[in-house]
Image (cartoon, rainbow, N blue to C red; front, side):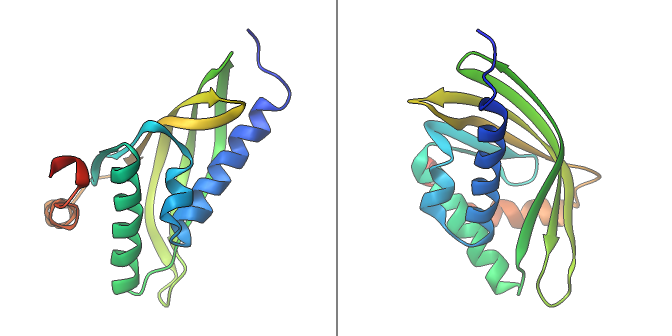
Length: 154
C-alpha cells in the first residue's frame, strides 16, 4: 500500500509534538508520541521501553536540565521518510540546543525511527538517537547513575 498525501506531514507533526513535549517537561504528552510498547534509545542514555520507562525518562531529563540551568530545544532537519502502508521508517539530523543562560549546542546527532499508524495516528514504535562524536566516559557514567531507577529494572 502506498503512502497517502497526509502521511508525511502527520509524521512531521508527531516529531514536533515529541520535541515540544520533552523541551517543556510534558512527560505524559511525550510518552503519547509512542506506541504502548514503544521505545526510545540513545547511545549515551540507554533504552527505555513502555510508557512507564518513557515517562520516567522525560521526567528525569527535565529534572536534570533544570538542575543544570539548561533549556533544551530540539531541532530536526533533512528528513527521509519511507511509508509502507501502516508502517514507516524515518531518519533526520538532530541538533539539541541549550537555550538557557549559556546558549550553546548540547548535542549533534541523528534519529532513526520506526513508526506505526495506530487507529489512524502515527506513533513511534522505536526512536533511536545517535550522538555524533566521541562520548566521554565520565558523561556515560553520569548518565548510568542518572537513570539507575528505571521502572522496568525494578
